[in-house]
Length: 168
Image 1: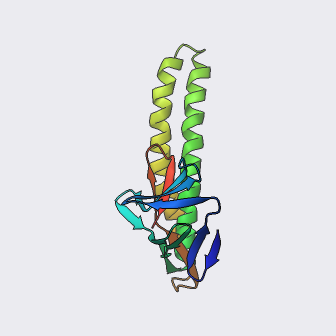
Image 2 (image 1 turned 60 degrees about the vertical axis):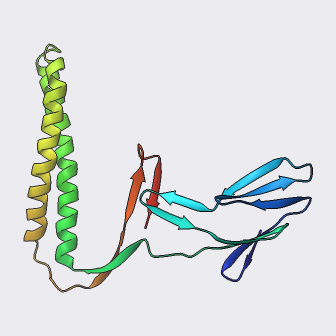
């Protein structure tokens, strides 16, 4: 495999390449398939096609790259608000867990079956409340609204149970 300008080239020795509508198959000298490469890659609701040229022993795939996000200018105030929201959410999680543990311990273990759902509710309320309080706290810090720093916002999505991530 080698790079050929803006293309990836694959040369096969001791076998051949076979092209059909959806795959390129590497075939050994005895005719048995060794490996296959999909020509159309599906990623969620998008499809990427490899523009290929194949003869008996050479494959050239032309692939292109696109941005997977966008750049935006941020101000010190925006960054303070974002930091306050993140810290508030962490504080909310810690507070919710603390409430559940204290409830379970103070009841001598009797209320442990109730402590879990109450703890989940406390964590959810703590996250929301913490994000609100943190955002307000971050906004109250005297900072400039003038954008002064670039930040890259990546646009990624997960397929299944977070097994695969694709970005576009």
